[in-house]
Image (cartoon, rainbow, N blue to C red; front, side):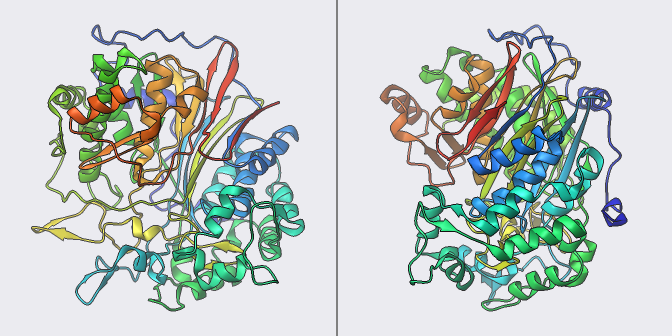
Length: 583
């Protein structure tokens, strides 16, 4: 790799985990010890035996096996993450790819340091707050997605290059063989991929997707067919030999720019935008939750909202009544409403807007918000944490097109990574055998209301707010004990919250917790795996202003693990096609 990836705009020095914990304790909680009113639920303390792999959980068996092969060859967790992402870009292109972005948390077992990497896409220099306006009003969302304006500079390759340089054990050029072989020789189209290929609308019928997914006989690929992608194989060969810079210099970015400049509604990406892109290191955010410490990325990720939820959960006794309790599910929904109200108002790219992280995580503010929960029977207003300024609450749309995976290597190093192209097949435009993201539609389309700026308004060089929250779980001494995350657009926070409540509050296995029915309550929007929820719980939710409707957002794809009894208790979401593998 070249020195290109050492120049990180706005990067922060890697922070020892102990320092991170102390800093968070100082700004968000009186101490790191359990308060007297924070009774520990019946969850066993982590075993003293160090948590080690190999362990991989990913949304496609081919990608999971690619990561496991790297681990068997002596690779690190980050090495395996590179191989998994390269494979997912081929076999699960509706969800993530090299043309997208990601957030990644890395735990270093030797130093007990936690590293947070931001590979979120970036708006071009030509972007204005009215990027998605036409004739004086916002574009229809689908028109915006399918436009050339929707693509930001992809960040996942640069981010992986930075992280692998710092945490890799194998050579960069050793990490792409499995994906390259599958691209050249072909792989079997899965039922889930086939359903997106044959959706018959939007990105699936773009001119790029139509060329790619149409067989010689004029029909579309179906489940069980063999799909080859020689153009992607060539991209992987170049990437392996030349390093990550091929994505930001020369012919490949020119191809990506050409795709975004095509009609309809050409975008403004330039070679200078690619040259200016930098992956970022940011200090992770960590907060106590029962006997654990939960760590997430900082804004523009929405991890701060998840930590706020967990803080409120500790102060909500009804949650302890268990997975079959109507009162517990009502509490879960009410806390989600409070969490989303603050997230939607305050979270954005902290390099551009003030995000009151300390105020949102202050113990007195969390207690104040949690005390409101019993009276929450409908949409609620955001609170006023210390350090907040008037902002517009926006309802940014965040549809399907994301995946999550977890890796632990033999030395106990771990990766929790959420990666995306935003909508399914991103913008529907392709270059180099992969789909380009439509990540800029994660910005608010409306930049102002009553003169106040939206925290997630478009701006040149800005990164859109993200609901992605790859999570690392530690014990109170800073040892690795778990990792989790999910796709799902704005519902990611609800999905991960549900799983953590299941594992920690309800003492469930990770597999049972991720398989629990989903409940998503964001403002007036209430969605759920309705048919899986008992009539008693449905009635209780309805009485509390949460009448269930089928989930209208991307389904969950939770993948995670918790270290118990000297082994990894892993889970792969049954709503997708993933697996959890151990050697």
